[in-house]
Length: 300
Ligand SMILES: [Zn+2]
Ligand SMILES: [Zn+2]
Ligand SMILES: [Zn+2]
Image (cartoon, rainbow, N blue to C red; front, side, top):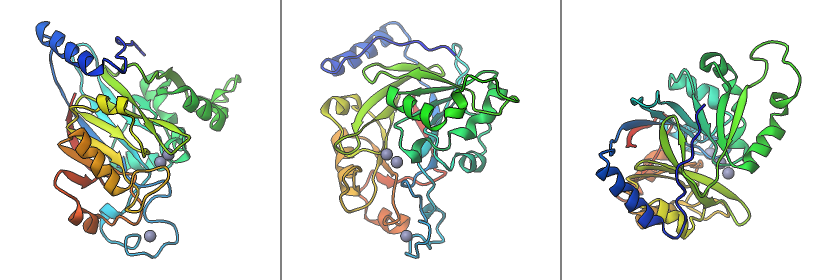
């Protein structure tokens, strides 16, 4: 797996740094864009929707868009003359196996992690098959604290003991994300974005081209807002209408989408208070609820 860091873009000079990068790309005749397909595997909060044992109208709804598995997306990175591209997964929720089967995604080439909460990592064992097809361990890109949690929670994958048979345990290889630096995955540049998830916990959002994915947050620092400038499609976690100590509510997410100036803001990580049809009817232009199976294109 080739892992090359590109030049650091430090906080203060960020706008200028992006402008310089853009101009340099034009001057060098290197400005080529591609279309990547984004697939929403899961769009529900940590307990999913329907909630076990709940008889509320949303949990009893016949609308498939009210059936929300735990949060993750796939970005299909197209091949170029320099890279084969591939399927990039963000987070491995407990529903991963059913999500990949549902969307007919046969293989994941690399995985990014936003943070280490159970609803974002506990499907990791489902990638056990992929090393057979990749011919190599599955690359995981995450911060050190996420690596520590994964090594602890999936300790059987990291024992210094020869497995009894191939595929007995997940074969994984870590690549550390430094949130100040862009990095390359599957031939495309990913910008990590620092987000706060309540008063004591930090997570990452990711920007790829004109698309950004920022779930599980209730505060986006100013330096991170700068990194979201120019994004066309912004995905934000929005749990419910009432405020919450660790997640944006719908109104806060709408406000942030306006602040960023995104053409489209898509809300994800939704709870059972947000019925699809009734919530969509009240959302302003340019803001929509994501749903499991939603597909859209991004320019990268
Ligand atoms: Zn979550
Ligand atoms: Zn319910
Ligand atoms: Zn979380």
